[in-house]
Amino acid sequence: MRELGEYIAGALGPAVTTTRVALGELTVEVRPQDVVKAMKFLRDDPNCLFHMLIDICGVDYPERAKRFDVVYHLLSLKKNLRIRVTAHVGEEEPIPSVTGVFNAAQWFEREAYDMYGIYFSDNPDLRRILTDYGFEGHPFRKDFPLTGYIEVRYDESQKRVVYEPVELRQEFRSFDFLSPWEGMLQPRMLPGDEKATGPTTGATTGTPPAANPAEKK
Image 1 (tube, rainbow, N blue to C red):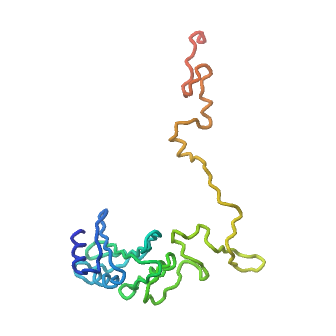
Image 2 (image 1 turned 90 degrees about the vertical axis):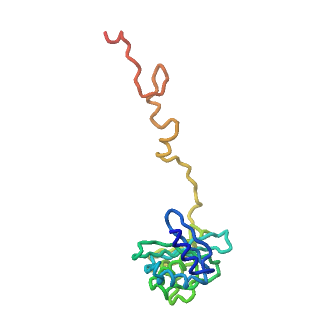
Image 3 (image 1 turned 45 degrees about the vertical axis):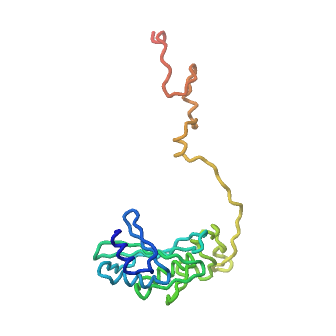
């Protein structure tokens, strides 16, 4: 895999910023403006032949200037190889669409746009695909509130679905209950342990006290 990464980096030149192999998987990082060039090369080069686009997804790093990673997963059935291609983009920075290279990219790019707000230029139908038309925000961003902004319910009086601002009936509560699995690992008294306490020795063991020899008569 390392040799393949070096070959790709040598062929694409400055378009590739870095390559790395981790856990037996090759990752190639490219400049956003060169992603279409990289995809065409990986698809058509006889040493690559990555003809199948498995997925396109995003990763959010709010603390970075280039906030998002756009991640492409490709498969070569001919070579029996997988490769991951990544590109860093900012929150307001578009990245070229690869729908002209892989037809399957259109829905994947729509999902990344819907969930993260990543804008893919030249996508012929870039609109939401998982959330509703009036949805506000992008749910997979790490600064998106857990409650969202809008709640949806069916109104019996109006006989239709209505959209309303989120209204919390009570504040969030933090329950500090110990789970049964954690309790098994703690050296502490559990409910019912007091029944094992010996009446004379006071030991908390499950072994009954020894019988008095005089009682046997």
